[in-house]
Image (cartoon, rainbow, N blue to C red; front, side, top):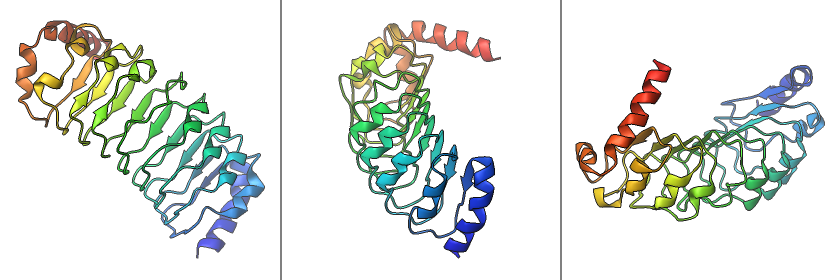
Length: 238
C-alpha cells in the first residue's frame, strides 16, 4: 500500500509543494521524494513506522516544515542543518535520545517540538536559533536545566512531565522568554531560582505537580513582581 500511496501523492506535491502521507505504515522515508527536492516546502509523514531519517533529508533546501510525529526515529542526521529555510521541526512521539549539533544551524527555525522522546539532557547549542518561538521538550527524561541556557531565544519553553530537580538561575536571563512550563517534575520549592520571579521576562510560570504546593510560591520574594507581569499580559490578551 505504501508505495502506490506515495506515487499518487507525488504528482499533487509537485504542484502544491506539500507532501502529506500519514498513518500508512511506511517503514522508510520515501526515496521517491528526492525527485521533489526543489519543490517541497512541507513534508508530513506522521503516524508511520519510519526508523531512520536519511542523510538525504538535507537536500530539501526549500523545506519550511518537516513533521514526523509518532514514528520510530532514534536519531536525527547531521545533514538536517542544511535546511536553512526550515521554520517548523516536529518529531513528537519518537525514540530520539539526543540532538545533533547541526540543529543550531537552522537559522529560520521557529518551532522545535520533541514531545515524548527519550531525551535525558537539556540540549545545548540552540542559542544560535534567533527566531525560536517554541521549544517543546515535554514528556522526556530531562533531570537538569543547566547553566548556560541564558542565551536561548525561545519565547516559550515547555518542560512539563520530565524529571527535573535542578533549575539553573540562568533561565531567568533568557532575553525573550515569556512562558516557562515545568509542570509534573521533581522540583522542591527551594530549587526555584528567585530571579525567575524578580528579574526575568517570564509572565507565565507553570509549576503544578511538583514536590511543593503551588500556593507556597506566593510566599517567595519577588512573587508580586511576577504577578504584575502575569496580570499585564493577561490584560493584553483579554
